[in-house]
Image 1 (tube, helix red, strand yellow):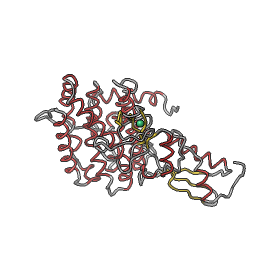
Image 2 (cartoon, chains in turn green, blue):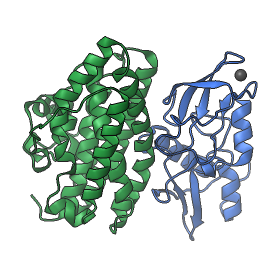
Image 3 (spheres, rainbow over the protein chains, first blue to last red):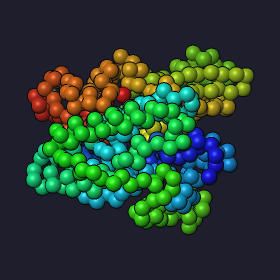
Image 4 (spheres, helix red, strand yellow):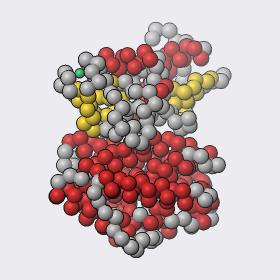
Length: 247
Length: 166
Ligand SMILES: [Zn+2]
């Protein structure tokens, strides 16, 4: 691990986008309705674009000549710095959507805060990404409300997804020295915004946040769940078996 | 493109770029969309600075190639394309003339300043590019390209693309 907190921080931001973007892109051609298929593909595309900016920046900071592709395709699971939430499997459409909402509700205020960062590159990437994240949040919020406050079937699926995923949200705003080196004390405001926003939307969606959940952590320091390894094997196989292969 | 202008002015170069269409919406140019941020030159090379519309937009690469080719076609060999992220591209940079062209092409132009979370849910009125009716509904916030949302007019019943405020 390099000692530069900016490198680690850029990896965290980039890996979140990469892992979520890759998972979401698996829906392409499989979504329940055409409009959602297009929306999922577009969200995935935005996230992969943001990945390229963050990981490209991380590679420059690291200074060992690794570019965004090298970092995406040639690292092992232990070297990934994404939070546990984004690596949770797609499950059904409800689970995919709930994962997206729980991420977007953090990602948007986080990027907004980072757009004011003293690090110019961090601020630039955040400024570019935050507008995309606003649309992601807009969409996932609307769908969580419609499906939560929808039929019995959709409500139950959304509640089950929330019950299963809420335990991974604590890691989003739990800070350590790396986060603090980049964003200072700004995290406490993000935690507050996150909790206020999600509870307001879940109220509207008639969904209940599970009580007294133990919050899982580890992703940010490279301790991942099983799902990440399987997903990376799929994503990286081409570059691993044919190093340097190009389209 | 008959003349080989090997010593073009900055103004010449801008006018060449005005002929480079957006690869996905060919009725408007990359200049009208506000994608070209700067044109500079030194003794030997021309440097064009562009900004991506959406970070993952596949058209960005194509636009860079198209710009390079357009300048080379005028006989300039050394062209460099640089990318700039900040200030982030906004639909406010799309010229009024281009907004008219978008509308004539069947795409509702962006409403000014509606790009924030909740803007679409809060019900910004989007007008139908065919009949101008404000009686429209959003089918999906994501359309055929990253920059567009999918709408339907409830008066003339036509579906249409809306160029999202961004
Ligand atoms: Zn109409």
